[in-house]
Amino acid sequence: MSSAPVAQLDRANGYEPLGCAFESHRAQVIFYSDWLNGRMVNKLNQEKYLREALKEAEKAYKKNEVPVGAVIVQDKKIIARAYNQTIKLNDPTAHAEILALRKAARKVGNYRLNDCQMYVTVEPCPMCAGALIWARAKELIYGASDPKSGACGSVINLFSEKKFNHHVKVTFGILEEDCRNLIQKFFRRRRY
Ligand SMILES: [Zn+2]
Image (cartoon, rainbow, N blue to C red):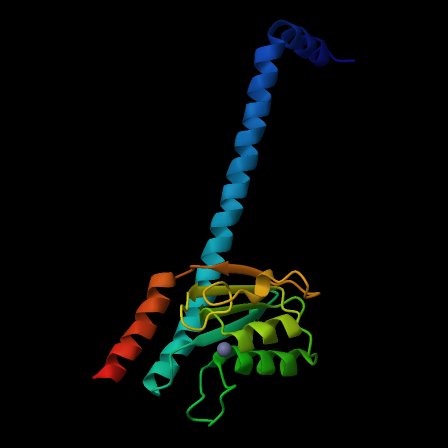
């Protein structure tokens, strides 16, 4: 046996209470900074994908449709993108989220999108929130809330209903200001 463990033991005997406290504090700091780093990386990724959804919303804005855009991500890759086209398609269900879900399901060849995340600029309505649950989506990330038709807590909260057998993780408030500004700009323009 080398002398190192004995020396360590001696030291541990002499300073045990303080040493233990120091080590455990150090472990906590490392754990906390890893956790914080993870959250920061996650937030940057969320912003990156939501910015892509915003690009879709801008396409809708240019075509005089209510500017909402969505992208669907699987394994860190965007597999579908869409924007609201209810007027152009004469289709009340042609919301960005529904169009994106249809594209994604076709792409993966499955009506279930278990490992997919949806990024959308505005809080989904009851139809789209329902479609996300039916698609078994993993996660929903949205920017601005919609006080008039949002189904993630603004008017109702479909995602907090425990009786459904699938639960979607919901994160909101990412790039909130940019998402809200675009929709407000659209409704201001329509009033004049
Ligand atoms: Zn909708």
